[in-house]
Length: 267
Image (cartoon, rainbow, N blue to C red; front, side, top):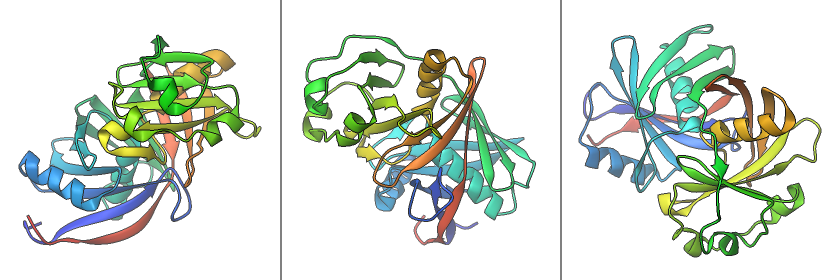
């Protein structure tokens, strides 16, 4: 690939239908460009995440950017990277690829239309809600926890969760990557529901957040006594994440739909 004419993809992740799930851009590169260029491309794409891939021995280096910042872990843009590599003939059915990331080595495995990500568990611990957090969400909390990245707020039920309408300006002042709001699911086919807000990272509400499920898999797994669960992220677009706890790792499973394939004409 030359500097001009870089192939890019837009992929809806954690869904089996277009215009649902969480869209991510994927830009495969032959070598790393300056960080400022990567950030500018992510800002231009103006999606919650843009992932960049560079080949290395045994797999790929993978980095993720929101329109504002580089992040340490992103599930849906990793799944999207797997779908893009399959489109390029680099990930065959039944194959597994490794990604070197800021969160260590991650893998994606393809089984037909399904992609399974091997991610680290990110458990939360009970915490005090910082000043302004619950007021910004407009909810009462049954439980408040915090992990490496996010606050987790359990609310009374799914109805409460779906009605949450945050004050994003106030929420952006809370010092964390984002806020997971969760409740038990009213629908028997799902174990739990969630929403994810990250205005400080430039994403008011993320449609489907794979990395949040690295926390939710542990949180709901312990409460329900299950290692395999199905979560529904109840954003306007909606998306399904299958999770399976394996020791200190969690498998995030889902599908992806290619929405666009084009050329990036500036390098």
